[in-house]
Image (cartoon, rainbow, N blue to C red; front, side, top):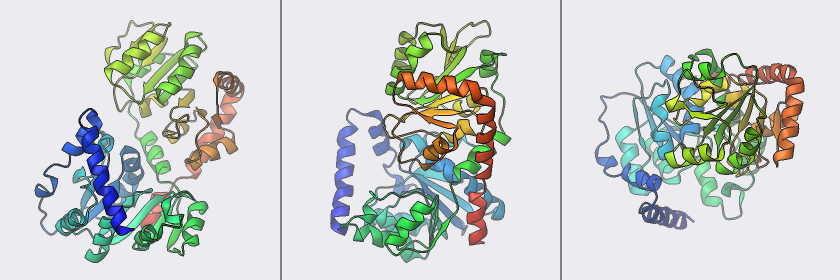
Length: 402
């Protein structure tokens, strides 16, 4: 299986190189790794603590722990690696303690040995379910402590399959797993891994911290004015917009903010063309605008926009890639999303608790909105209490390791 894994890594690189001929994101994935191993910074005997994150969402999960580590070890060197361009390109918009960030070189034995030997991290944190075998084995040989944080596993993952012994061996190299829920702990126990502590999801720490330090957004503030009902559509995909735009065109809402996942010019223009009500883009906003819809066509404004809303629809629930529902929840916005949320335990917890609402079609969306509006104050209060009760995962991890 080790050789099949390595063959898969090389095949993946070949596939991305082919895709890079016509896909800008794939091209960026390739170009971001060119010459990387020959241009790494040299350190003056500093203690290196390494976090690996797949993308921006995982970076946000790791960020509260990074900040606590920085407070505890002000002179350490915090290294961050990303698998995806979306993480590497946008992490700098966060208030962070990172000393150096780069793409993770492809997971080959040679790359892993060279990268790990160069930095020699004392501690390494893999966020959620990023497990790159060659790096993990190289880290073990180097003597680094290896941890997995906010771990979330499901029965269909390869570690629990008949062919998964090589991947189970990878997991056995970890010193400790700090998992999101009991289900993940039980799955790890089923393959005889018991160095596990249920600490919860560090994203709750992240959104609570964001709320505490939130800065006003004058453009959104001017747009919503004193309107009592603001419907926010966050991180929407085309399938979400196909459901939402007809209702928006019916003037069902007093004010609407749409923050699509894809903010390229072509996609923004397609939304504008489908809307029959007055709309304006965030980048072109003006004080005298009477628009009903504000389209956020830049990255990094959504979290603050939620603070001005009353109900949120979060995209990705029709494709199985639900976006962050904690961002609106921390402000007490009842959250609506699509039906494919099996991979996101927080979504089911929201549904069970009465402030998350899964919908499959337009009529269900209308029904949920009407129900929310009739009980919004009670729903909001219960939601905020739930989010605040989940805080503290990052401190639990650091306290355990101290």
